[in-house]
Image (tube, rainbow over all chains, first blue to last red; front, side):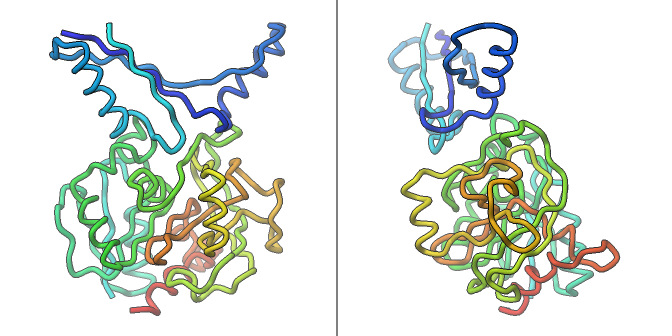
Length: 80
Length: 228
């Protein structure tokens, strides 16, 4: 069995309205020097597949098809 | 003519669309459950507003895999008229039938209010009863209507006249102040290159009767009816 961790974030260059709002909140709380905040999604997927390579391939296909909208989002897959 | 109104789990403007097409315009109309794998006998399909699949993951992301969507795609590819309103527009984007994607409104708020739209094109089957450059008043109701498209595609949309509606003031003046959600260049509605698939965030079905105090939306449905 493999566990996959999937991170989906808005692409660089796509303005992130949630990230911008959180950055302003951090600024006003006095956390100095916050340059940028990007908000995304984190998913954990448990798989029966025992080969890490095959698991990664499968989850990458999931990202392309459903988990991320590649028009505006990037994804990163980690297998543990 | 006959309208087909696609119903996904979580659609909630389906009956409004049925009411307008069936009772106000007095056309034939019926619902199409999302499990249907074939659609036939329809002149125009409506993907209504709502919260298909609870907006889980992303708006429209799961609805695009409903069995009916393959049939909607075939219908559109064969030149059939398809209009996606609000969540229906989001589904058309996710399905790749229209370019771009929706982000969360830049205010992060769900916005429900009347807005003015500048009609940018009246040479397509959805807006022939409107005048290019005029302003119409139509309500919006969404949290994810912040239309994003990359620079190259935006240029193409503009050059080929595919932007149909922009958020504007009551005189039809388009400026950042009247952009309710952060959409690129105030875009509220676009059409595909072939001119048979329209997506718009505002709800024309909510302003199609005098008793509701606003009939601007009816002219969009009347444009469609006039073609069949």
